[in-house]
Image 1 (tube, rainbow over the protein chains, first blue to last red):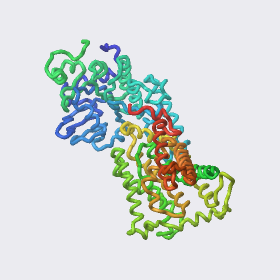
Image 2 (cartoon, each protein chain N blue to C red):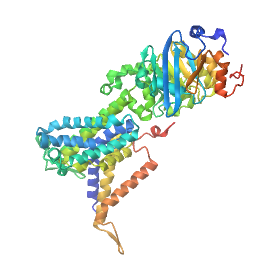
Image 3 (tube, chains in turn brown, yellow):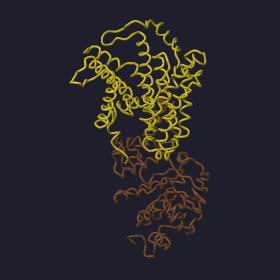
Image 4 (cartoon, rainbow over the protein chains, first blue to last red):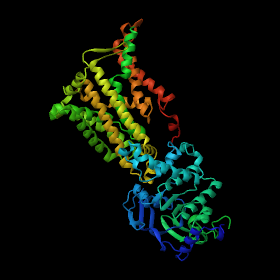
Length: 290
Length: 336
């Protein structure tokens, strides 16, 4: 368990802000960066997502958990424009996002990663990183012809990319093809690449899947680091220990709906959540090391 | 067996006009297929845009041939939009279907009797290239004269087209090389691998794919122009499916996603093709008889040559899938 005195200032602020929030699905947050209402997505006869209302507190780390097939990834896809909702409205920083194309959400400051990592294996690690930078002059073909138009910007992008790679401890892989990285390193690369877009909201889809336990601790720190730099983090995760460790707030989904919200401690004791995960009431905490 | 003729012709095949127009078309196809991963099977359609752009100036518009260059490029841009708008949002295979069909539609329309006034029907269009030939004459390359020495002997007419052709190859290749080194090229290469990753990083994949399709198509258009200028005529059946697939073959032979590959591939392709053709023809002149069985009649040369080309390509794909210039490492990590 994380002890009180080891918590960063940002953690304390985030948790204090959330302390007064009602522990109920769809609870209003004091300063929401993202809020969504009536979001519904059906695949044939199956209702994959049916979220009445949800808000994400700015500057916090919010975990989105739930059993397989609960609709977490689908909700991610809807919010980021990678899938189209049947109904619903949502806003990011007050801007309505229902009809925004996926590539525009990133430039608005809302960036996501994928459950199955999408490192571009045939580009080098540093090229992967450079790709993440937005508003590059050289990405217009008529500018691309003239190095003097984009070379300076490229140099500053490279510098920022190297800094991030070093922070994520994959700086030594800079010139390797991304395909040469291990699964865990690819997760790190994808996260670092997402940060190249200078996001305000980072949405991570199962950042821990396939990552070995030693690296998990490391990733936890990186996620806290993002929040300490002022970003808001929303992540999907199955690893309950990690959720408990790193998140300020937990939202639980099951069968497409949000069934519970609260602090990690509340959630791990919530009977509805235990039901959703295990089917029948076991009366036990979900954490191994309570 | 006349080896000096075989060698001379093979070298001509290696650097000749066929290699030139294939190389330009392959550079364009490489932008689409090699760098962006777009399956354009209709490069012949783009080439027809260029050829007919030139031809129609004299035949239909009645204006100077040089207007044919912007007209041809305008045709190819329109064609690019027509192919791209419905398909670039879909999976890659749909583009393949649409491009192959579009190229055939173009060929069938331009050779139809109905539109003979515009495109000249199956006879095509002739006699539009004088203003191009005249420049050659003006700078003193006499069309009928022989220039050079064995094994490099060309007529003045050939030399003039070759010089212009290779200059176009060099300029276009350098243009594409610069683009692929730029951040723009990086986005294309990223799209080739995973569109969703690129989308999640804030790039409009559709727009980049469209740019790539049109740019590659416009380069293909220039290839059609060079070809039409060399022949001094435009024939609809020069822009059939097989042309696209031979160009694709030559590109893969040279190595995809490398600008040098798209130049050297066509050279090797035509070098080998011409060598085999000439060699087999020499064999057929003096056929070997084994009882009733004759090895190589002159009528068999063409068929056998295509078979051997096919065999060469199969062997190449098995033993060197990245082509002559391709990067093995870039090919090595498939999927994840």
